[in-house]
Image (tube, rainbow over all chains, first blue to last red; front, side, top):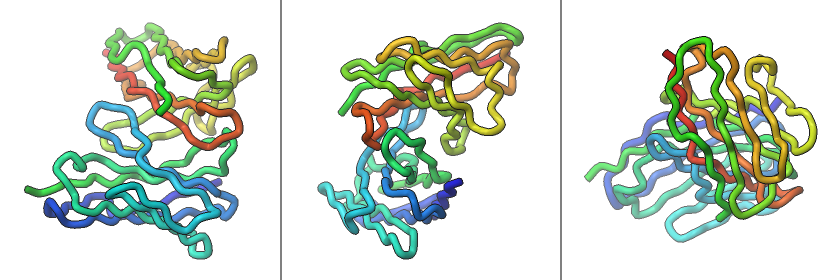
Length: 112
Length: 116
C-alpha cells in the first residue's frame, strides 16, 4: 500500500521568513496530494491540494510543488505569520473516493 | 468549503460501556465517509471507509465488531465504540467527499473520547 514520509517533524521559523515541508510517496498510482493544517484540538483543515497533472500550484502565501518522477511534493509558506503555527500534514490518494494516506505531520512554530 | 460536523465534541465514559459518535455532512450528500483515529502528537490513522447503504470497509488491524459503523443516510454516518476500554481513548475524526468521484475530503472537528 501507499506510504507517505514527511520531513521535518518539527520546524521553527522566524516570523516573516519562509517555511518548507517535504514529503515523499511510494505508490506511483497516487494522483492527488492534499495538505492539511491542524490546530490543537481541532480537525484537519484543507489548505491546498495538487493533482498529478500539474507541477505547481499557488494560493496567496502558500504554494505546493510536485515531482512525479521523484515521487515527492513540498509545501512552501512565505511571509510566515504567528497564525501559521500549527501541525501540517501532507497526504496522498489515488482519487475518486479513495482513502487518503497521511504523513506523520510537521509541527511548525513561528517565532516572534 | 463543505461543512462536516461531529457530535459529541467530547465524551467521557466508564470502561465497558458503548459510545456512539455521529458524523454529518451539513450542506452536501456523501455516499462515502471516512473514520480516523488520532492519538496525541501522532498522525491520523484511517480506521474504516463508510459506504451509504452497504457495509463499511475496515483497515487491517481494526476490529469491525468493536468499532461499529452505520451509514444509514447520505448525510449521516455513526461510529459506535463497543465495550470501550481506556486504550480506546483517542481523538476520532470523520471526513466526507462533497462530490462523488472526486478526491477532496473535508474533515469534521473531531470527537475526543476518554474512557475511565
